[in-house]
Length: 237
Image 1 (cartoon, rainbow, N blue to C red):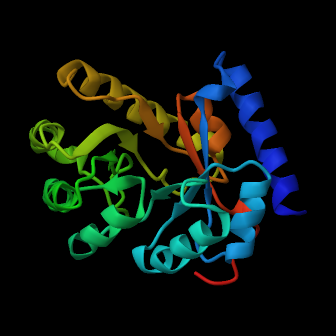
Image 2 (spheres, rainbow, N blue to C red; image 1 turned 120 degrees about the vertical axis):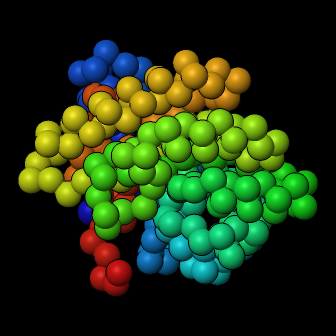
């Protein structure tokens, strides 16, 4: 199937999941994850109505984003960094991306804030949480909950990175339904942070990918990150 046909099918699934949960489908943002896919695929997605594109690596994005902007126009797409960000690449990420979803330490947030200040930008961020305590995944460690809350307090005080919610990568589980408790836990954590730190925005819950996004939507996702179901199977990592 074409990218356009895949997008149509994914949108239908998003709408169905939202209706089952009694939600408005317009509350849910679809981020099409174009990691390893060529410019032609991104352009096809845009022409089929995609408005938000996710990339995992700063180096790959640094090649793609300027070329796509030249082809389509500077402000046609909103770019999300969804992969792990090293502090040494923070300055480049600030310059390239409209949203950074993968802020996983206080030190990274502070480095990004300095870069954003230098570039005279205010950058929306999401805090990545390792909700399943998976040692192979990045994200804030909730086993050290008091330290996490202290870090959140400091991050929400930074002037040029603007916390807007949470992100997680669901654990590898036998079925999508097995991911439900983790998505529910992230929503409950977001609600707790909203009560503790009402001066920040906690609108967004970025959770759910190709294999489990319908369940994530039923549990409150406002952003889903879909790659394979839109662009097809990746042939490289």
